[in-house]
Each structure stands twice: as C-alpha cells, then as structure tokens.
Amino acid sequence: MQEGGSQLGDESLIGKMMDVCGEAEYKLANELLQYEVQIERDILEPLNQLAEVEIPNILKQRKQLAKLVLDYDSAKARWYQATKSNNQAMAAKADSLKDEMDEALNKVEICKDQLSADLYNFASKEGDYARYYVMLLEAQADYHRRSLAALEGAIPTIQLQQDSWMEKPAFGTALEEHLKRSNREIALPIEACVMMLLETGMKEEGLFRIAAGASKLKKLKAALDCSTSQLEEFYSDPHAVAGALKSYLRELPEPLMTFGLYDEWTQAPNVSDPDKRLQALWVTCDRLPKTHKANLRYLVKFLAKLAQDSDVNKMTPSNIAIVLGPNLLWAKTEGSLAEMAAATSVHVVAIIEPIIQHADWFFPEEVDFNVSGIFAMPTHPATPDPEPSQERKRPGSLVGQDGDSHTPRKDRYLSRPNLSLSLPLTLPSRPKTLSRQESRGPAVSALYVVANESITVTETPTEDLPSPDFKAAQ
Image 1 (cartoon, helix red, strand yellow):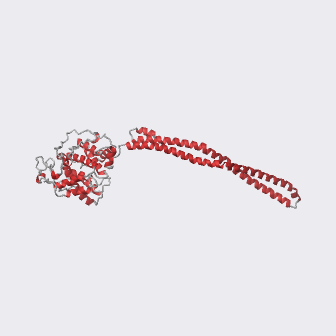
Image 2 (spheres, one colour; image 1 turned 30 degrees about the horizontal axis):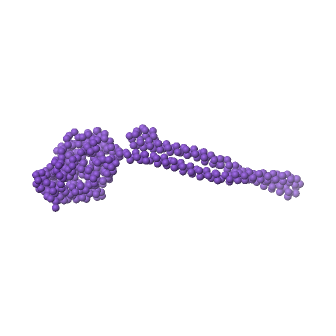
C-alpha cells in the first residue's frame, strides 16, 4: 500500500491516504505478530503438553484398567467353576487358577493406583491449566488495545489530510458548502466560465443557446470539479464553457435564486405598475442570502455585458432570460410538464430579463470578474460603469441627472422592452431525448430542451413605449 502511495506521489490525496494507511497497517501487522508469538510461547505450549501428553496418558490408563478388570473377571470365573466341578482334573487345576486370579487382581490394583495418581496430579494442576484460558483472553484484549491505539493514532492524521484537501467536486454541491471549503466568494465554475467567456465568447453568436459537444463539456466539468486552473484548451470552445456554466447552475441542490424566495420572485412580475414591479424585484433580490446574492450579482453583471454585444451574438436580455432563466430559478415541488413549462417560462423571463437590462441599477457596485486572481484578464477593455458615484435609490425615488424627479435616468433604463413578450419557439418535429441527470423535474428539463432550439423573440419597439414614470412610492 505504501509502495502504491509513493507511485501516486505526495500531490495526490489518494497517495497520501495510502501512505498513512500503509503505515497504520504495518503497525497492526507488527502487533499481530507479537500477539501470535506470545500466544504460542505462553499459552499454546503448556496447553499442548496437557492435551497431547497428560490427558492421553490418563485415557490410556483407563483403557488398561478396563482390560485388566476383564482379565480378572475371567480368571475368577474359571477358578470358581473349577472349585465347583466334580471332575478330578478340574479340581487339580483349582490351585493354579487361584494363583492366576490373584495375579490378575494384583495387576488391577497396580493399574488403579497409577490411574488414581495421574488423576490426582491432574486435579492438582487444573487451576493452573484453567489460568491459561484467562491468559488467552487477556492477551487478546491487550492485542486489540494496542491495535486500537495504532488506529486512533492514524485516524487524526488521515482525517486532517481529508479535511485539508480542497479539491472536491463543485457540481452538485450546495453553493454555501463549496464556498466555505474552497474559501471563495464566487463559485469556481462561475468565475472560471465567466473569465473564459469574457476572453473568447462575447462575440459568439447563440451563446448559451447552441449546445456544445458532449465529450468536451464532460471534460470541462471534470476539470472544474478537480479545481484545476489549466483550462487553456477550453478557451477556443465558448459553447462548451457556456454549457458548463448552465450545467453548474442547473445541478445546484438549491437554485441560485433560492427556493425560499420562489413565491416572491414569481409574484413580482404580476405587479402592473413598471416602477413598483422593479421595486418588487429589487426587494426580493435584496432578501437573498449573502452568498447567493454575491454570485447572482457577479453572474448578472456578466450577462449584462454579454447583452451589450447582442447585435453580434444575438443574445438580447430576453434571449438570455429564456435560455438561462430556468437554470436560475425553479419550484421545489413541480407540477405537470405542461403546467410548469407554461408558468415557469413566463415567470422566469419576466424576472430575469429586467434584472439583466437594469443590472447596473440592481447592482451598482463595480465587479472585478477576476475575483481570485488566478485567471488571465480579458484582452479587451472593460465597459465602464455609468456614473458610479450616483447614490443608489429605490425605483420610486430615482432622480435624473438634471434634478427632475419625474425623469428617469437614461443610463439606467436603456431600451426598456415590453415585458409582455410573444415567444414563438420552434420546437423539434420529433421528441427530443432529455440528457439532464439532475432531479429538477420534467418541467425545467423541457424548458432546457426548448432553450436549446432556435428562438424567435418578438418585442415591442422601445420608441413606441412611454418612458416609465418613477414617482415616489406611497
């Protein structure tokens, strides 16, 4: 085991485990060897003397005595018959038969004395022999105690190795757990994918919509799961990177926008007044747990940057909301496929799209996408945050640059779309096999399949819409 661990090297967790376990097994083997030697010397040899010499002698003496008793009984019967016979010849033999009987009796007495002596000797030593069985149990107990001590000495070491190992799978792990054990603010798969897409994917048409090759996606997910920073080969395939990001969000045990706020999220788009609708979304967003809010902020800022190039990549905020929204929010208890597909698509688009459109208002702080500093910075310059010094205010009390309280800031509300969207989706002519493996339910899986097909989004032109009137909230 230690030899195998040395072959894997000190950088391998399994190699370290095999080395520590091999050392513990070596100690256990030594303890076992000492135990067996002690048992052989102190217990088995004396008991072997008892079992192979003394007890067989006693049994032999008993058999001999039984034989002599039979001989004596036979001689006695012949002598008695001779004394009762009227035959002269038989009467003459009576004396010789009497001598034969006396000799047989004498042999019986000698054998009885020898057997009695052996039995008395055994009885006097029986307590000593019984002590060997006590010694056997004591030796076993001592062996197990020493073995347990060796194991207890190894367990903290091997547990320390396990606890200090930070390269644990990120996919399918709760966000809080992943961030805690990796000592990160932003989940590694999110940061890594965003950094790669910032470098090579911002101009890619159909990002997050076009499916990547399964083998490439599987390899990238495995690389992110082992926390490697050697991701250069994936920069050339932005669709695989986008697929890995979607897969990470989809495989979270709890969605990034949380189960607990699902009702609040889905109720916010039902507010008819645009100002109050945005305010409801802001209030819900502000109630997110700290870790979820930080990661959502990071992701939304990136998606807003992606939407700035929608003329090239065709990924408008509404398109992004359609293909990525079902991976950010879903119900904990899902209904039928048709019900969830109808309800969730409308809710998710109406939630995610305005958050992406007004990302700088929802999250006015600057975002350093290279949070951990382990990735190369994008070669193209970052888009400056418009008026970062503007104090953040609620939608109902936002004041424009010229001080007019009834004029919304144009840099915060660019191209406000009509949230009542017509979403004719071109579905495949035959059923599409779902490849999703996590337990998100059939509805979200259906949306995910639909999101991978061609999408046509019809929006009401911005110039035909009145500007939202932001009045003080009552």
